[in-house]
Each structure stands twice: as structure tokens, then as C-alpha cells.
Amino acid sequence: MNREELSVSVVIPVFNEELTIGDIVARTRSILGQFRFPSEVLVIDDGSVDRSAEISQESEARVLRGAHKGKGHALRFGFKQAKGDIIVTLDSDGSHNPEEIPLVLRYILENKVDFVIGSRFFDTTATRAKIPKVNRIGNMMFNNLIRLLTGVRVSDSQSGFRAIRSSVIKKMRLNSRGYEVESEMLVKALKMGVRVAEIPVSFEQRTIGKSKLDPLRDGTKILYSIITSYLS
Image (tube, rainbow, N blue to C red; front, top):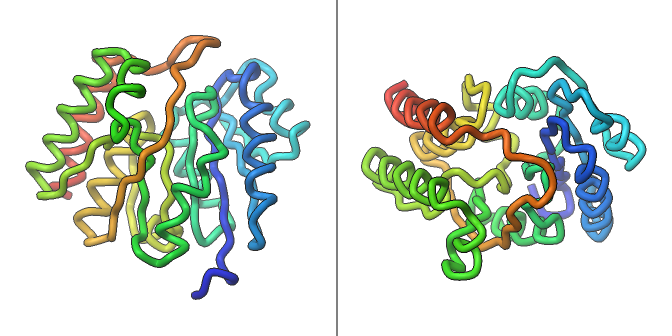
């Protein structure tokens, strides 16, 4: 399949992010409009009780709504509904820069890899200062465990900003309901022999609202997911 035949779906899970989601969708649609190939912005509303879904629709995203079951469940639902040959995921809280979507797509469009992770840790100084210490330590621990199990070194296994061929996702049996979905996808992709690369991306710590990630509870789930994904 050549570059002209490709299509892209940007899948954005959202849970109570009415203050940021409209801007993220608008910027995503704007950058996709610069490409020549077909694209869509697909927002998966994970049971929000605010106006996240309505604002997404007003911003002209394709919106799918469901009960609150977690980020992993929302992404899995989105993957099944996405029409693109390449799927991009990014968070809805404003921490990722939609203008960098061409960066995470580049290596796939050039047919160099099948899975690209937008790493927050390539530019070590500027980005790390914006990420809480407990998150940095947890990420490093998970990176090291993945390297120990798979032999592949990654700098940001927990990044939610990534691009992957939909054909790869269809070969995976994903089970995650929460934040452990990123680890499950990565470990299973590496076990499958998928070509994986990282590229540096910028990161902005949220200034609006509160993170839904619980370091202890979700960290335990991520650890368990890495091990079970490798053993399955």
C-alpha cells in the first residue's frame, strides 16, 4: 500500500475534559486537513458527566459514547470503530500537541516501522521537569522491565501519543480497561516482531482539572499487564 492510499484515524479517549477537548479536536482536524489522504477524528466519550461529548460534536469530531469503563476500554472500542489504515492516539487533557501528529506518522508513512511512540524523554531536560517525579520513576521502572523481558529498550513505554497500523492492532487480543493499555499494546507488539520506533515529542503538564491516574493503583495494574502480556 503506497502513501497515497493510506487513511488515518485519530482516536481520542475522553472523560470529563470539557475545558480542553474542543481545542484538541479543532487543532487535530486542522493538522489533518493539511494531508492529502482521508482522515477522521474519533472521540470516545468514556461516560463523561460534563459536556465533553457535546463539545466534541460541536467541534466536528465523530463521537461515540459509552458507560465509564476506563481508558483502555475506550481505546479498544475506538480501535474497532476506526476506519483508518493508521491509528493515532493522543490524550484529551492538552498534554499532547496535535501539531506533532505528522512526527508520529512520518516513519510509518515512509514504511520504516509499524508502531511509533511519541516519547516525552528524548529531550530529557525540558520535558522531565514538567512530569511529576513519581510518574518518572514509575515509567523508568516499566521501561526497564519491558527491556528485561523483550530485549528492546524504550524511553517512554507509558506515552499515550502514538501511531500504529490498524492491521497490527487487529492481530492483538487487547484486554486492558485502564491506563495499562499502553503497556499491553507495546509488549504484545514487540512479541509479534512488529517494527517499533520512538520519536521525541513535547509535553505539557495539565493546568486544568486533575489527573485521573492513581500512581499506586494504576501502577500495579501496569506492572501486572506487562508481565501477563509477555507470558500470554
